[in-house]
Each structure stands twice: as C-alpha cells, then as structure tokens.
Image 1: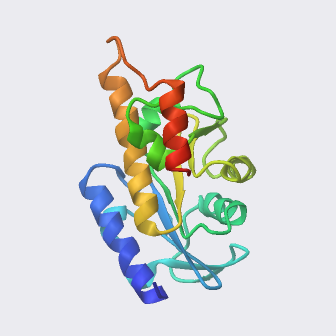
Image 2 (image 1 turned 180 degrees about the horizontal axis):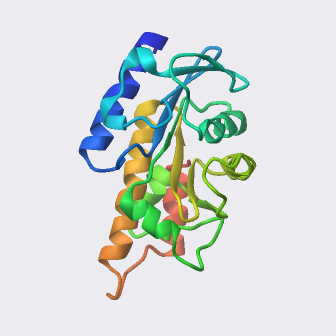
Length: 210
C-alpha cells in the first residue's frame, strides 16, 4: 500500500482495536513500514481517535520527520523492523488478558504461551517473553530486537504484547490471537486442561511455519 493508504489503514485498525476494548485510554501504538521509514501513532493518542494527517512519519533511523510527536515507544517498532527485514507492520497493545498473562511467574522466555488451540501455533509461533524494563526506557528496544530476530510475537513482562507481521492485517490477526489465547488460559484456570501435545505442536509448526 502507498503512504496515504497506510495512514488510513492505521486509523481504521486503531478504531477497531479501541472498539473491542483492546487499547484502553491512550495505550498502545501501531506502525506501518513505508519505503524510507515508517509511520507510527502519536504519543498520548487514543487509538480510537486517530487522524491520518497527524500520524508521525519517521525515517529509517527512527528520526521524526513530520506529523505529531511519535509514541515514546517508537524504539520498540524500530528494533523490530531492524531485526525482521520483511516486517511490514508492528502493533503494541496493553490488552487486558495479554498484560495479565505477562505478569505470571515462571514463564519460558523462549516459549511463553503454552498452546491450547492450533491457532496459537499457526498465528503466533513461539511467543517470547522479555524481562521487565520501565516503559520508555530504550534498553527495552535492545531486548525486543534480540527477541524479534527469532519471534514475531513477544510479551513484555508486566507490560503487554508486541507483534510483527508482513502486513498490517497479519499483525492485527496475530495480536488478537495472542489476546484470545491468554484469555483462554485464565478462563481454564483451575480446570484440567488438554494442552496440545508436543507431536501436535510440531506438526502444526511444520505445516504452518512462522
């Protein structure tokens, strides 16, 4: 898509995520790669009230070129784009169930979300967990970049999900799947759970490599 289309698509997705309750207040940010950099949502902006012309335009180094001041977490997006050259979009949310799941103790940093349904595997692959770092602290960028080299779905401990996709629609589908997978874990808490077996997960990964 061209830049004008990308601006419109970001605003439409922001409105959809807000309407579904996945971006409370002014939390969350969305970016889309363009030829010489990326577009990203502004700081302190509600995803439900974005304006195409006010999205921030950043160059390939992350420097602000035009539009409103970019989200303070733009370095997360830059780190993912650098780690994943085919990445076309990045979404970071503070969606309730994914945030709650990111607060659980004892998660595997390389495979944090144990699959209950096949779609967890098909749309997310292995979900990484990176250690807690204060929001806005650029040390988090290095951790996310390292994780993004092997994972396109990442949980920031005690903070929320970051998901990359080759397109904006792919990133949106993945981050919604992450939220729903986390929600299932809480809904099933205290019940005997039939998790997917290792063989079932391997088969899914072989067929739907991500």
